[in-house]
Image 1 (cartoon, rainbow, N blue to C red):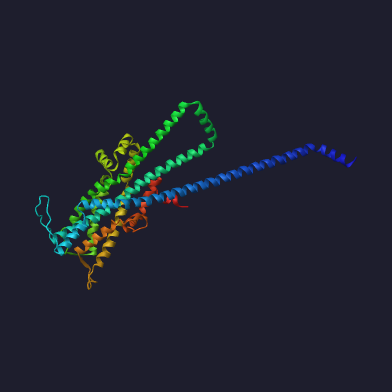
Image 2: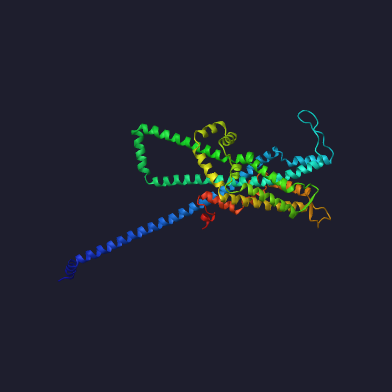
Length: 439
């Protein structure tokens, strides 16, 4: 039998086995290819998911850090306003110093009251006593008010930023979910546009309503941010009242010529802070809340009338849902134990800042030959407190954007418990800032 016939005969005899083998090889290859494809696809999705998670994590971190910077800038913008409020409420220390200089130069002229009659001038001793008392009151009042203001601003902006971020995330997720249906949705929209004119009208009305809702939300958020007006114009007076009473107790009978050591001055100031804290930070006591926020509808209405224009106020009254939700959360934050702890930390940091500055300024006022002197006249402490208070209220142009830095605000802004509370509010998880920012 010729070789080619033998080959064909052999191929015919084993054709079934060959087909089975080839089919098996093809199936195995196809299965392997499919498995490899799905494995690669799974790995790609896992990598994409990890990348998206990392991106979201970085976005959250950047948004959080930016919010804390915005809070500090806000305080810089509000300080000049409050400085004017203090001066208008008889705490203008520079005015008293000017009168003292006039007394020293014997150039003071009699002033006239509203009736046109000459009013009696204050003596030098009376002016020094007034400067001593008001320097103490202003210094401690600035401490409590600025500490409370930076705390309030952090709470407000972190609540708002978190809500805005969540809204954006939800919208983005919905857009991604609907992306795969874009062509079908476009087809349905196109056909309905020609076949259903009533739907076009409905879509236009829905868009108009959405725009109106957006404006109402914006006005509600502006009303929420305007709450800081309360402490700067009304709430701080409660601090002022408590502090004035404590100063009267601790410094009663100490005149400008009397002497104290730094330790004695620090001890008396410590008592003022401790007793003020006990009245403000007591649990089951709404003292802090009433200082930071208006507690009745009339106070709230008065605040909003001072901060919103007539058109915005009318729009606000038509829908206050968002405002009520925001203020309810803010009130819960203020009344929490964590917030009291943070405020106390800010006040403690303020006390250390004051004693450091007053100590440096007081010792710098020593005259030659007094280097070993440990006692200082109260008048020296008074001028040191005045200078310290001026630094704490420093609002040089560009301070928040790389210009002159307010050391006091920088010190408060770096208090760790404040960052922890801010992260807790921002995340709404109730844990410290390490929860999301560790790699």
